[in-house]
Every structure is written in structure tokens, then in C-alpha cells.
Image (cartoon, rainbow, N blue to C red; front, side):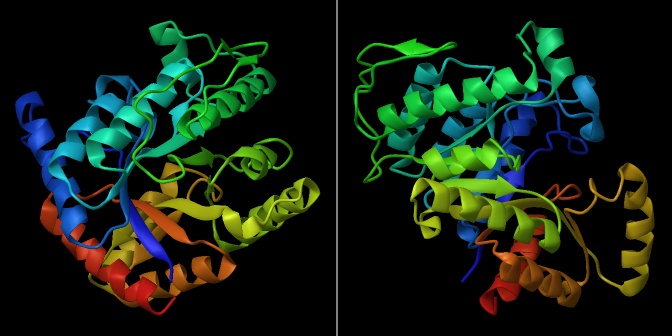
Length: 317
């Protein structure tokens, strides 16, 4: 049976200032924890994304926030979707993730990707190499992080990173080490890196896109001699529950202006029955963990409502 998870990308809420911000996020996360959501994810950005208000809008640092959420939740997994490889030394990232796993009692994920927000990099002084170089960095980071998160003390020397007997004590609480998720659907390199190094992948788009990307992933697994069932397929999208057909139509028209067809393919908009139908399509295409952000959610009640819809939708999927 497919499961569902919550991403928290939004940090601007009506009448919520900096002092009240974490209590609000705590309420959203604990509602997910109590409501059957599989896990809670945050983004790795220091400037808010343009669709959510851009650099002048509020956002919190991901690993610090997850540490705080670990202390107020009991069951949900916790992860960053995904850490940009350009922002942190991979050995440091492995230590941060291990600390989260210890604090949370074995609930951490390591999400890792090649990064993309060039304006953020330039504004804050991070180097932003070309795509090919960032993917090289991602490959080296995966080698180092995987070793450190599996109880090894890796020695590695690459073009971008090096470690020499990288001890990681204490190790993760999870048996077998922290699970690694790679974000992105690049068919030549990213999905091959998933097949080589990761426990999960995260892919966007509609059911047809998802099905195609999974076929590519499975071909890489076959080339490398890996069982594709060892790789969990996750899918990120935005959820917009509505209460009527008229509300659905109005919302579709409003959201259509936010991007092209490819950018809006991840939106699930509609009443419960329509959301259930779309969820079934995604699960039939191969999604095993459906990760949703709720752009209009601002209270625990919103999380509870969405969770009820998704629980029903995934029960028959």
C-alpha cells in the first residue's frame, strides 16, 4: 500500500511573526505525526523560492528546523527534500544527519541533490558550478555520505571532496544506517546515481512522466546488477483539496497562470473523489510514497483534513 508524506515549504502565515513561527510549524508537524502521515520534509534553501514570495519572504534553515521537530514528534520520518550538494561539506552533512537520527530515535532521512537556485548561491556567496560539475559533486558526496552513514570510516579523494578515515561516532540509530534519497529525474546521470547509491528517488510530474522515469531507473538498475525493488520511488507534488466543482474550476484557472504545463503537472486539485482518482493513477504508475505540500494550509486542521483525504485515497491504492 502506498503511503503519504508532508512537505513544509511555506513559512509565511497570516498574523504569525518570527516568535510565533516555530510554534505554528510545530503544530503542523505534530498534526502530521498524529494523523498517519509517513514523514515530514523541509526544503534546503536560505532564500524563499520565487513562487512563495522570493528572498524577502521568511524561511528557516533545514537541519536546525528538523532537529527541533524531532523533539516534538514521535513517529514520522524527518528529512530534507533535498540537501543541495553545494551548501555543505558531505562529511559535515553526514554528521548532521546522524545527529538528527540520534535525536529522533532513528527517524532521519538523508535527501541529496545537485542544487539549482542560482540566485540564492550568488546572493549568499556559494559557488554555483555548471550542471556537469554539480553532478560530479553529487556523486562524490554520495560515496562519502553512504560510507559514513553505514558505519564505515571511508577514505576517499575526488576532484571536489576528500576524507581520510572519516569516523562518525556515534553512528546512526537506524539498523543499516540512514536511508538516502536522491532528488531529480535526470535520465543519464541522476537516475543512474540513484541506482548506484540511493535507497530512494524523488520524481515530479504526472503519471506518464513518473512511469517513464521509473522505466529509465530500472534500466540503470539492470545495467548495474541492482534489484530495483530496493529503491523506493517517491513523488513530490502540491495538493489543493476543494469543496465543490465550482471551487475546483476557479482554483484550476488561478493556478494555471503559475507556470507551464510541465511545472503544474504536479498539482492535485479537486474534491476527495478526484484526488483519490489521481492518487490511484500515480500509484499504478509506480509511486510508493506520495509527498505533498499544501500551499494553502496554515493550521493543524488543514493538515488533518488533507490527511483524511489521503488516508482514504491510499487505502485502496
